[in-house]
Amino acid sequence: MTHRENADQLVVLKGIRKYYPVKEGGLIGEKSAVKAVDGIDLDIHRGETLGLVGESGCGKSTLGRVILRLEPPTQGEIHFDGEDVLAMSSNQMHGLRRRMQIIFQDPYSSLNPRQTVGGIIGEGLLIHKVGTKSERTERVRHIMEVVGLRPEYINRYPHEFSGGQRQRIGVGRALALQPELIICDEPVSALDVSIQAQVINLLMDLQEEFHLTYLFVSHDLSVVRHISDRVAVMYLGRLVELADKRELYDNPLHPYTQALLEAAPTPNADVVKNRKGLTGDIPSPLSPPPGCHFHPRCPHVMDRCREKVPAFQVHKPRHRVRCFLYSDETE
Image (cartoon, rainbow, N blue to C red; front, side, top):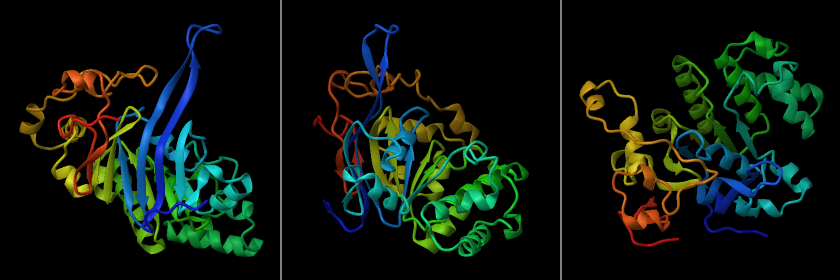
C-alpha cells in the first residue's frame, strides 16, 4: 500500500511506540514495560538533516533502530518513500535495506575485528550481489578515497586504525550501497573533539555529493546546531519540540529545550555563574510520571501538567511544541 502525503517526505512516522516488557519481583512478579518510545509523530524530508536531541536514555537511538526495522515497533506506522515498511515481507525488506543504512556510535565495537577494511565496507555489496568481485573491490577502493582513507589500506584490520579512521570505515560501510537515508547514531560522541569536526564536515560533504538524507541522533547541541536543518527534542520517549534549527536555537519554547540550551558549554563565565540548570534526574522509562513527563523537573509546572498530556501541536509556522504554556489541548 502506498501512502504519500508530501513528495518531500522520505520518512513518515505515525504513533510510533516501542515498549520493552519486563517482569517485576522475579519470576512471578507483575509484568510492566519500559516505554522507550511513547507515541512519536515525525517526518524526515528528502535531502535534509534532522537532528534528534535529548539526554541519554530518552529513546533517541531506539527510534532510529525502529525506523530501520532493526527492532519492531510495539505500535504505529512507518512509511518510507510512500511505502508501508511494517507491511513488507522479508524479501521486500531485503531490497529496502539498500536504501537506508546506519552509522553506529562506537567505532571500536561496531567493526568486526576479524574482517579487513575491504571486507567491512564491501560486505553489503556482497550480500546484495552487487557487481562482480573485481567491481566490488574497485567500488570499495573508491569509497575509501571518498571518506578519506588510503585505498592501499584495503587489506588492513580495524585495530590498525585510529578512532577517527575507524569511524570513517563505518561511514564508508553505510555509503557502499548508495542509500537515500542514513541514521547517524551519535557518530562522533566516542571521538576526540579535534576529530569530531573532521567527521561532521565529511558527513556534510557526502550529503551534498550523494544527495543523502540524515537522521542525526546526538546529545550534543553544538554538534546538532552545526549539521542540522531542523531539530527535534526528545524527552523520556516523547517529542517535546520541533522546529527549524535557527528558530529552535533563537527562540526555544519548551522549558526542557531552554534548559538544554542553557546547559550547553560556553566560555562566558557570567553566563555559567547565573545558570540555574535542571533539578532532579531524568525519571525511569519503566515508571514515567503521569501527565507531562517533564513536570517533576519543570520550573513552570502547573496542576494540569501533573495529570494530563499536552498535545504536540503547531504553535507557529514550522514550530511544534508539547507544553501547556502554549495550549490547553491534550492528547
